[in-house]
Length: 324
Ligand code: GLV
Ligand code: GLV
Image (tube, rainbow, N blue to C red; front, side, top):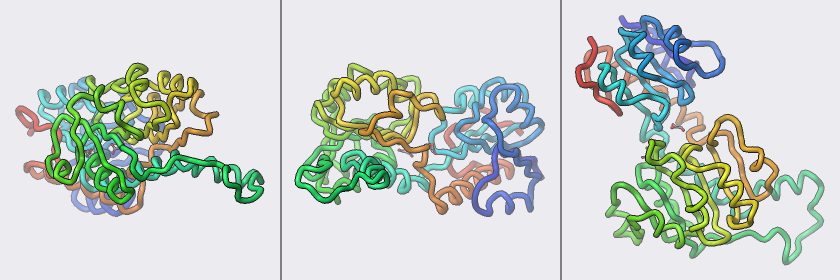
């Protein structure tokens, strides 16, 4: 029997099933934890299941010598010091695959909402502004024949690319790894992001946040997009220089933006809030009932495996010498 610390209650039955075999401690709702506070909560636990806003650092591994696995309840693991985990003997796992379709769907929801002015139209109707159909009323931008550009052709980027076909769009993408099956279907690989941007009508971001991708989309790159292009971000807010994004919206260069994530989440740049050509969501990429339960199942499976001395199903970090 091991001890498992969980920083928030999770949907589905996974935690209660885990509690049949292990001692499970769930933190009551509160602000995300970091540093010594998180270490105090983890204490002598063998496993930690945490959220993407909890910051897991080298200090935690030093202060919690019994900790063997950090099961991040997310696909993006930028909240964890991965190198410190590796050298401290701690597994890090994430929740890939189970959230791919939900996140790709939400990227398309943002693409459609911002190009067809869905949220703006809803607000107008509620405010009593609908005075009847007019030929030139609230015109948006059609998707058919337009070029979506995908940054990061991992699982989610590929799922977004597959959906593009249904809208009659031909994908261009840039990624660390090429995706030959998509090239056979007509997707164009552009090795250099700077060369991709001028060709793109809608840029959708699906790369992980790493030191290399922080502010990948900055003022210079935003202005490499054609005038009137749209930016959609369902990855991590820090991939975009948010102040530069606001400036590119203000100077009219961008046609609009659809954002699920923010640079200083949950804070939202005040320059975004008042703009009608921006659609803002509260980090809902994986937020379906089924997906969030499946993420809990997978996080728990990872914990169970490590506590049983086995290799977890979805490791991000395999420790040099796993702690016993
Ligand atoms: C959500 O943002 C995730 O990384 O799962
Ligand atoms: C996420 O899993 C991705 O690969 O895009």
